[in-house]
Length: 206
Image (cartoon, rainbow, N blue to C red; front, side, top):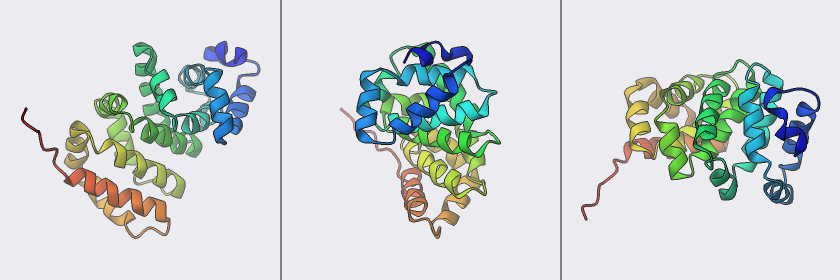
């Protein structure tokens, strides 16, 4: 915790701490321990504060990808508005990174955060996130494809994201091409993403 707390500027031990968090967060018990240690916000600050260090960002995003499965963590990361905004900028950088790990785990974090309606609105309002996901659908990496399509699926529930994704005709074409993917998870994500984009939100009059 101490190392990550100081780690906004990188430095000694921060990479090791990020790797440790990523490995511990792979199990449910590990995630619960890390939540008690309040590791998510320092980890997000490390990812945002060291954007040029793609190895560090990759490990930080992998840890966040596991931690953001938890509702508590998604809420914790919203605690400080400025930090949440900075994380979105960091995610926009990560998902368009030439580093496959940054891109893959950045998409995973976006998809997990988008489960929370408050995060979904903030992410969908950021055109660089939407454009980044749209362009990364063309990635040749299967794991990037899987997490990118998953992020599109979860964001597509939002009206603003729906409009932006629909305006880019290539998004629908790419999603359709994934319906036949050998990766069953990617295919399922694609099917739900298309359904979410096509379903118009019916406003209920009070």
